[in-house]
Length: 554
Image 1: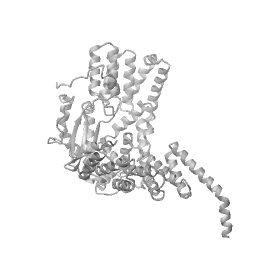
Image 2: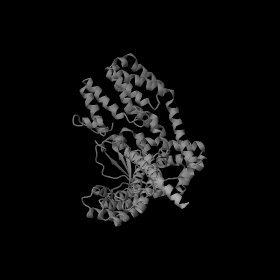
Image 3: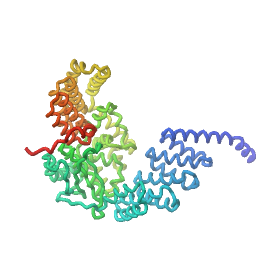
């Protein structure tokens, strides 16, 4: 019997090897074509089914790398660790060690990241990645708020590896450990001397700040149901200048006397453009700071959809964010529904804030007072998954799916039938533009159609886009004064609900210039370069025009 079995195995061996080789080739193809989810699944199957194959070690590495790229950190960790244990002589072992550090860093498993770096240094002291591992130890300790040891680690790193590519990052963290800060009684960093220091809009914003902070705690009490009265926070104000990015404010954790504080950096351009936007951002960011103070590192371990969803919900920003996000997609010629990619998706960005906040609208729809209950119990240390499932009345994965569907229904409701009619007008305009017939189209039907749509739908998520397209059409057919009236309305009405105000200001300047109105053009270009200096139009024209001076008190 045994003899027969052995004979059968010998006969089948070539076929089994062929199957294994085919499986490995399919795994390679998936990885090379960046189908990382597919490659991850294939690698897990390969090392299970072909553990003795000559390329099993490589399969572990490919699987770990695929998991890292797919954001499947737990699965990547398992494959990398198995490779280190079973295939330590594989030629990819150095990269595996280094990428496992990246997995831990990305997954916020910071203690494990430190342990792995120390193990890597011991196992491979001559590695090309040795400087990174030393740097990552200090960086991880900073993120764990072990500021004293982080400072020692990073300063030692700078001495030992002065030519490292990570030296600037080391400086970044060292500079945030007990930086010299001169604060006023309201926690505002003194010393701002930028372009708005004498601008009436900025001066008034600073006067409003103490009252707005006090009001923020009241708003969060009402919306989230928790009594938050203070936070370890400092406010800093900076000009964005000609730096090209979309941030209106940023936050970071810094060390003050080796204790964690939130530094809120507000970009002054956005403060002067919209007092309402600034007020809501204060509420949003104070929510983050206060929850972090109560929960400690546990707050940072929460997924972004929980942190940002509660911040948007708590600051009552949902409707404005919906209009800005959905309207922005349409302005860029994209399908607005593409941002509805599910709660807790791997590639979370600011467009996901819509779904994040909608998740808590859904939770409140499932149980009145559900958000208050969620926040109170979360701050006491209960698991967010358990809470979301329990209060939502269904298992966690189904609750996420239901919340995602709820977000979709909200968007569909806000878009309504007006979406189709607007897109029909816009697409008709684009078609005429491609045929060079858009000027006649504006005069004959386009302007009227945009006017009529806007009159019926003044609060629609596409209202800013419609106002902009109407204004642009009027300017292009030579009705400059009327066109500028609508462009000015974009800059005055749509700062919170849209991201196209810089484009509108550019068209104001272009309109005056086309009309050969030198004084008007000078003013409009000056406003663009002063208040929208971060925009592409300002950057492209900064050497041709002069930024306006500060707005004076009347």
